[in-house]
Image 1: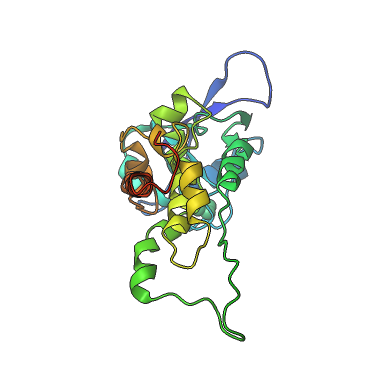
Image 2: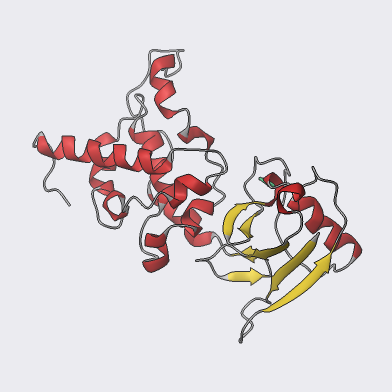
Length: 240
Ligand code: FES
């Protein structure tokens, strides 16, 4: 397998460089296995993130031949005969090589309060329960592993880093449609903004690259419909 990897030191002025490597890989080994082999056997200075190696932690997101993906989910055999270009996720400051600073991404997710807000005290000794049917609505959104592939692929975020971005909106969806959450009104008001739900222009890039196959754009459109319903019923102040 041939690799061309974008290399850059943190805050180093000037253009990045591209280093080439060759490694042997069995067909079912992953791009992450190749990266590990490069680092262990050829170049210990190469920087990238990884943890679980099984598509669970979301830490090895990068751009592989121009498409944002998890290196641990991409098989060597699918790139046989081609040179594989590895680059850091676009739209974020490079810390080193394939590692980017995801703090702005996590700040945006925090902004939508990604936790259950329920003030009503449940009956003593009981949990807050939810029917299987209600939970099914959230099922796919619950898969988000915060890898940031969707945000890095979003043309709206590329133009305007103030846009909340698809991942935050998926988390907003997850709590907006949770029947146990009691902050519905606050969430709808927060999401009713050109920098939030209305910023999405249905490019569908997020849906295409999501490694957990979450229907991201569809979830955002469901938020928009909820906002419209809420404000049309006259409970809110204004639309958009
Ligand atoms: S290393 Fe955890 S998702 Fe790939």
